[in-house]
Length: 288
Image (cartoon, one colour):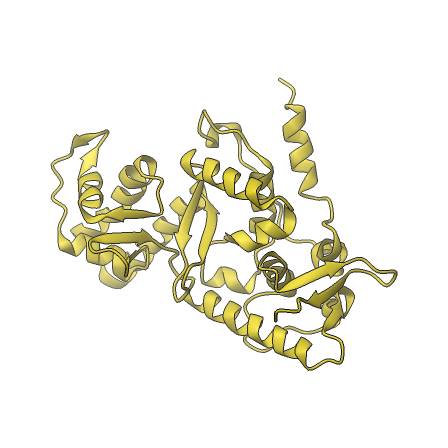
């Protein structure tokens, strides 16, 4: 059966350069083959949209240095930098989340920032955390909570936070029925210590689903944002050509490449991008 035209167009768009940053050498580097979803990997009700395709692009181009700490993810700001209609991005992200195609996870050490990743990658992340816990603790009965999380909680609960009562109920259920598995505080503590859950500081007995291993990445992001803005402010004109960034080496200890950082800063309106005869130009917005 021939592939639908809309799907062919969207897959093709993953290889098309984006305006500005996308036309630089940074986006033309040859990376690993892009990850496409097979039809049998998608929920039956799932309909890929432009935000889905943009997320695929961002995941495929996730910085190599950051992969040592976390499964590839994207920020909402980066999606805004690719798709101009922010209302559309918000709506489509919500559709992808409720359609169980995308997970929205709290980033550690950040006030109100979330990571967006495919549900299949979330499952892989939890399994990786399980293997690490087993390597450090040995085989203990509590490790089964990681399987419960991806097999029982994730398919049934698409919100970004969950009440303690709902969490324990879902962990102890199978196919909507009580499984007979006793959920203890040791199980919850294991998920918290592994970084898969964090306590909601605003509401009692509520947990946020979180991005395990992303602490060093968030630390690097905050530092690189600050350094980039400071560097532009020191210039007579707070602007820089994208091609100049391509020639620069990454700062020592930086986990994120210019491509990741610039997309984020365009999406947060820290930078504006303009076309010029010399190529794409990035300019610091006046409020910064």
